[in-house]
Image 1 (tube, one colour):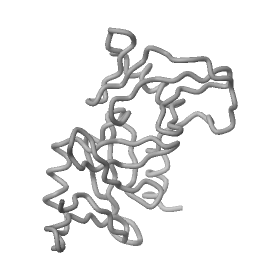
Image 2 (tube, rainbow, N blue to C red; image 1 turned 45 degrees about the vertical axis):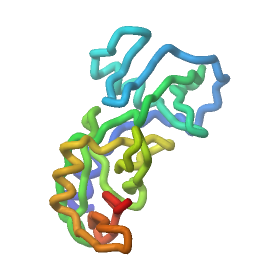
Image 3 (cartoon, rainbow, N blue to C red; image 1 turned 60 degrees about the vertical axis):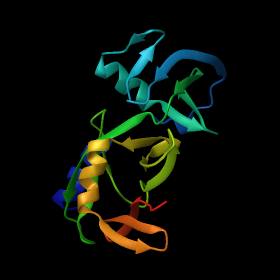
Length: 179
């Protein structure tokens, strides 16, 4: 194993094994993640990063609904858009070419790859890029990061306009599509 591979493994988020648990559904919890990635319990914002990371480690999305799942219980929470925001990026060398890594608002590092691709989704009347994550979750690219990556993207003319393509570790990903 080379140093880059070891570093990448250490940067991956540590997740609880929720796939191994089958607890009963216990109802709705008044927990909400707003469109800016802020976490709220009832009417108060959760300001403790450690508590947010703990909740995020047991979160999953099933059938478009978001849940926190422990061995003992499963509760539904509300997510306005995506539970996470990709706030920064960096390039790292790999055997198949430079790979783009994203950092989320929870400081998780995620490689742009076949396991974690970019997808375009509609939100608030716009087509926006989202990084697909584990257990059906996603991170919307922050607007500043999106514009930074547009400068780095390959522009491809299409019949309807121009698409923006990012290349990461030898694969191509659609960042923006002409509408």
